[in-house]
Length: 155
Image (cartoon, rainbow, N blue to C red; front, top):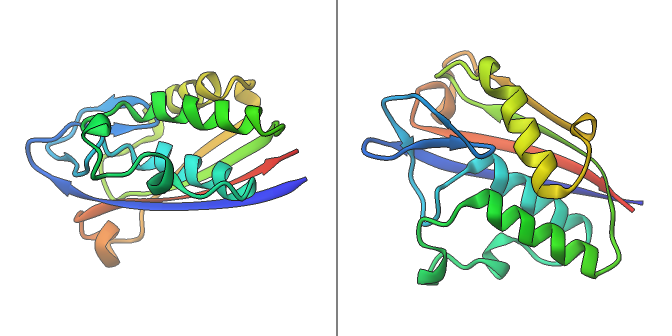
């Protein structure tokens, strides 16, 4: 068994959609990035790749490659899972925490879990998504950005 940790952060910006775990969430700002900037999917991908010692998302999907401009990060997660399978790995579980002052994410958690589970080809019971504020401290607390920590177990 191998454990992986992923972390990602994106700045909030006007004129962008807020997409977390493949779910478009109504909000006045969205996440800035080369792809759809789905910070949750990115942290999960880095955890999975890290557990298998297969690099990170920057190695597999570089942000200077126009092929990934506005890419759907759930589709990229599917590709990461294909790479894991190709290398003989199976996902045991995924646990993630979104650090976000607003909007409230509780109504969207189950949809995020479902999207991640489907992309990974695993049961939803193996995917945990949690959200917390940071009591208005730091860049996530003041609404400048959103961060995610993810851990996983692979066999």
